[in-house]
Amino acid sequence: MSTIAVIEDSETIRDELIVFLQNNGFSAYALTDFKEAAQTVLRLQPDCVLLDLNLPGIDGNMICRDIKKQSEIAVIVVTSRSNDVDELIALNLGADDFIEKPYNLQILLARMRRLLDTENQQLTYNYRSVHFDLGKGTISRDEVQEELTKNEMRILLCLFQNKGQIVTREQLMNYLWNESVYIDDNTLTVNINRLRKKLMGFGCEELIETKRGMGYLLHELD
Amino acid sequence: MNWIEYLSSKAAVLLGCLLFYGLFMFFLLTLGVQPEIWMVFTVLFLLMVISLYLLDYYKRKRFYTAFFRTLNDLEQKTLIDVLIQRPGFLEGDYLLDALEITNQDMNTRINSYQQAQRDYQEYIELWIHEIKTPLTSLQLLVSNHPHAKQQQMMKEITSIQDYVEQVLYYSRTQFAEKDYLIKAVNLQDCVDEVLRKYASTFIEKQIKVDLHHLDRQVLTDSKWIVFILAQLVSNALKYMPSQSGLLSIYTTSTQRTLSLHLDDNGIGIRASDLYRVFEKGFTGENGRSFTHATGMGLYLCKQLTLKLNLGLEIASEHGTQVIVRFPLDQTLR
Image (cartoon, rainbow over all chains, first blue to last red; front, side):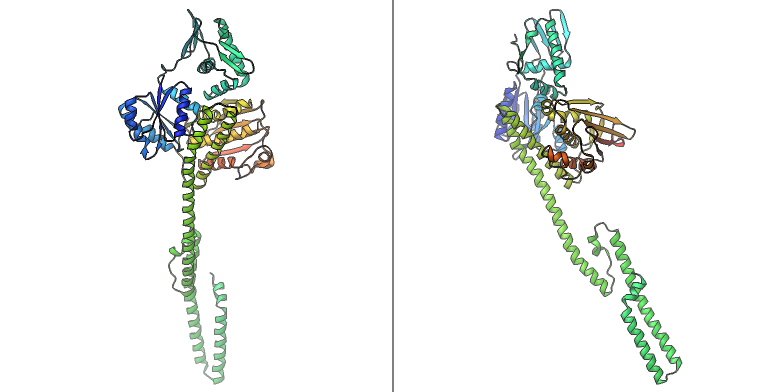
């Protein structure tokens, strides 16, 4: 699991960010002493740092620079100013990415996941004797392999990331739209049916359960 | 000032001179003075009067011509008293003295209004910066703790964010001369950002989206384009029917222009309202009867496109068609 260090001045935002990150499969903690922030980060070695630029009395850009000078730790810089100039400065000082407040939380997640080692993100799983590789987009069992379309991959990934919970059609569509797949209700049905057909080919069509009136639920995995 | 005006203004004095001349001549005649003296006096008198008045005329004419010509050419007319040479005759000097006083008063006021505007704009930018903190806190709090009214709360928060952004852009179009950063921008990226923002509305109302030919680069300010597109999409969403709504976003190009089209199949805009949609505060038929509209959205879009040197057109036939035109000598292929 990746660890994220949150450097943020506002207590509420700090605490809620940690809750949000933990709810989404990350381990997170906050720094409260900003003067020694860079040193603390270098000592604790998180996988990623969420750095607010507007810290009282301290230039966040300098913290970023100091961290980057001595490590490869990913730094995402956050700001309330809606300015392209700030972005250029931050990126020039070594920030890996730049995000504005208020957060688009889905984007924040997506960018963090993209930045961090994809090895950390689990993309493969097994159900019965069927192997799913969402990185490559394949289903396979023994020697037989079938390709998944991009949409089918995404649908499975969404269900997988929410395993144990019912995912509504609306949630699925929101997830896809966030990936710039502007699917509509009918097309979603078509995609799910096609996916189920493929699953049937591997004898595991019960993997995606339909909960009448509510949504879809991924069956217990291995 | 021409010579007719001048003479008519001196009419009283001239008449008086004439009278005096007449009386004096009569007096000389009755005294039996010789005609030669009489003629000499007349000639001298005429010479003196004419030359004096001619000199006076030209001195004044030179000043007034220069004065009004300079006044006409000046952009900031309250600077006239500083730029014109003192004429040396009484009325001219008085004129400039008076102008000096009034202009100084005017300039001081103008400067203080400009400064007040700058201060206000700075305050707005600061306020917007500050408000983002509680907004972010609110968003995180609502998002992290699921409960019955969560979706509605998120909607209201988004609504606040939209109004805050509108304030920012209003402030920038009114008061900031150059607050944009031109760089290469991919239209698909901008459209993606906007659609992501309104995804839940599209999904909820089951409105479809049809995109093509958007992988194009233009030279412009990406944030402003995203803001403009967001306004346009937001408008389209308000007036499109649920379930059968369709928004088409695509580009067409000619040799000189790349046009970004947004076509919706909503209720459209009345022909009688069409020419007024870009006016500040105009809400039209739709705004009044359908939703709560401030009338600022399209006005801001117009202002922003003007600043960015882009075209913005609206037509309405079975829905609404909006076109944003990017001049091609400013675009990259």
